Amino acid sequence: MTPPTIRLRDNGPLVIQGPVTIVDAEGNAFEVPGDKPLIALCRCGQSGRKPFCDGSHRDCGFRAEQRARRDH
Image (tube, rainbow, N blue to C red):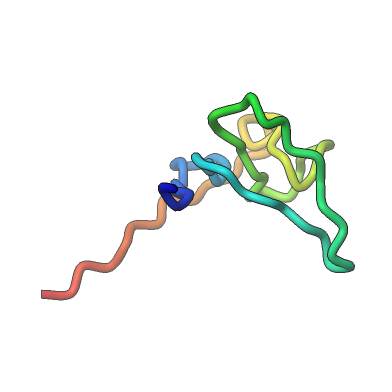
């Protein structure tokens, strides 16, 4: 099985591709539809559907454009 991939969208959510289980601080699993190929998790803190993204980052001015460090 291919491990999940997590991609940071510029000024947007974390997008997870692949099978994952998302649990809260008490170990309770959030319902994640099995038919969705991608899951978007909120990074801006403004989503009304936390931990999932609802697009609020577009209206709150959230900015984040991290890049992986490339050591040579």
